Length: 383
Image (tube, rainbow, N blue to C red):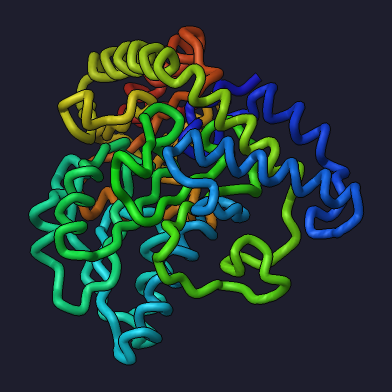
């Protein structure tokens, strides 16, 4: 059986999520007025309350989406469109070069269409975003700043509360993609004082196909889609009752064991990093301070190893890992995040999750300790 160290891409559903999905998979339409429909609506609204409690938000601020990508798009496009309509001129948006494509792509799409003036702030070499550098990009017409809570590739954690406090003084909304953060970090909309936040259930033990957009009441947001007006009129479409119930169940389970999971993953990731750094020509990327780095991530770069040969050899060894992120078409292209951070060498992201064990770390070290010297020497790698 393959060994997965790619939990940043997706992590297996938790038992609680599987049970909730199975129970409500055949639920009636939650917008129907009959009893079965209202039973389904009760499930949706109870899930909304549980999710809100898990992220320190009001249930009125929680909108269910198809995933993190839609949640990010809803915040970026929705806020920019609403601001442009309100101002009667082209607004200004600030984001960073290490954002997920779900933020950078819509931001650049809006800029290419002349619907927003865009500034993309470069990161520090460790993948973090400097607050002062971000504030320096602000203009009088800035209507939104979007900075991720934690980077999906290098695992770098940003100081979102400090940035939010500075922006609050300037009356500028802050959106944060917290997709990678939620599994191991305390995510609190109220404590962080952010205006919009995105989550994706399959990153914390829920099913694929459901996510969360937290949009503070009073924040003007134009919908991406129009239809029946479900979910505050911001997100039309039939409620995916089974997926939503499973999302809430996974969120409950993730919050309940988050502290223990973080400690366990920190121990595993430290052991994994120590073993990899014992090899010649290996560097760990990201912040040196463990508090500024996700406990789940180990991102390294190898000298003298061909990227394609490494990827093929890992597949043959049935070790699932990533040289970038699972957010594109699957094409073997350089990571814009790593380029922005000036990372050199052949990158490899190994990411742990709630099912990860010491045996997984042992297997990864066994495979890479064997593969890396052979790949450097040009020796054939046999699966």
